[in-house]
Length: 103
View 1 (cartoon, rainbow, N blue to C red):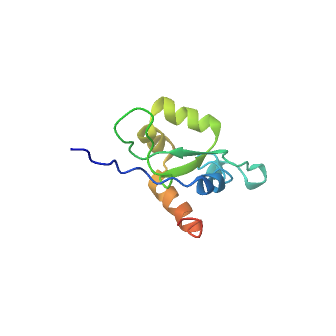
View 2 (cartoon, rainbow, N blue to C red):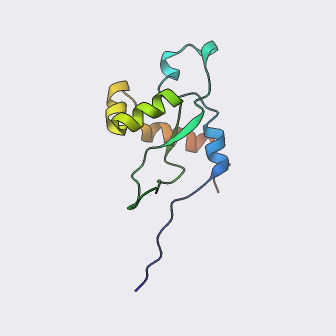
View 3 (cartoon, one colour):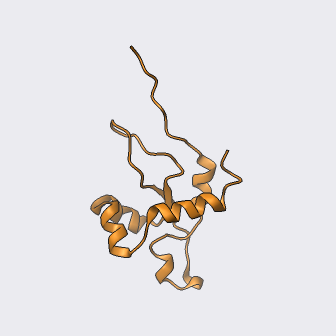
């Protein structure tokens, strides 16, 4: 018997807005005049089974390329502990901020 997969939610407009936000790691330690957008949204949630599957676009945080590479090299848990941040709390903040974009 075939059971359809529950596909993660996708929202390119939300990711586009999130990428304009400051890096969630750099921003707290960099003064505001030097702020630069993170440039990308990192999917931190648990992925599905199978190659190339990402979690929902709403389980993302804004992040710069330097820290994005570090996260993929060392892992979400390590980075959150190292910098004292919580990806879920940060993500929740941005979901509330952009709730008008979310269907």
